[in-house]
Length: 167
Ligand SMILES: [Zn+2]
Image (cartoon, rainbow, N blue to C red; front, side, top):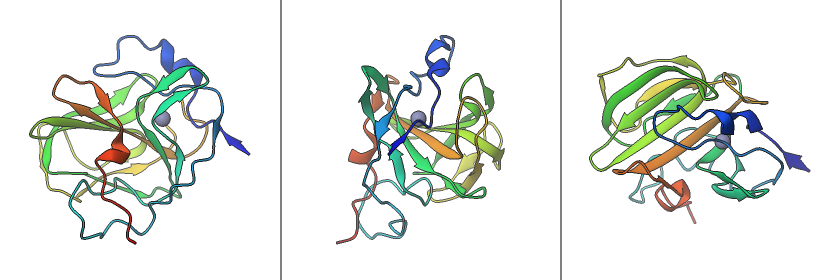
């Protein structure tokens, strides 16, 4: 079974503020299951939503996927992975309704939302609900496309920063 949650055409969007985009093509279903990890006592970022990772970070079919895709179900809550300031809240071509948070040394991005719960320049706390999942922009299924970037706006593998799974 393959899942193609982000459309190829996102790659053609050159004016995106920060980032690369979802790679197209097919990807093997990732077996990571973050559901239920939100309240882990390990340090690290809060999971941005509950749900299965349906597409990992990295190259898919020769194209770079700058984030992870997490399945959304009936407008799941999206949480700020850390405290920060909203530096973008609105619609971005390809990404649809999106939020970008600036943290101390990093940025996080949440795309394809159905609804935004915070406005630009507001401050959010870790774990605060900032949006609801959807399929706005180029998304073939309801999911959160999540990116985590360093201060130079280079995409990092989010799974290295999110809280470790419970044993
Ligand atoms: Zn994606």
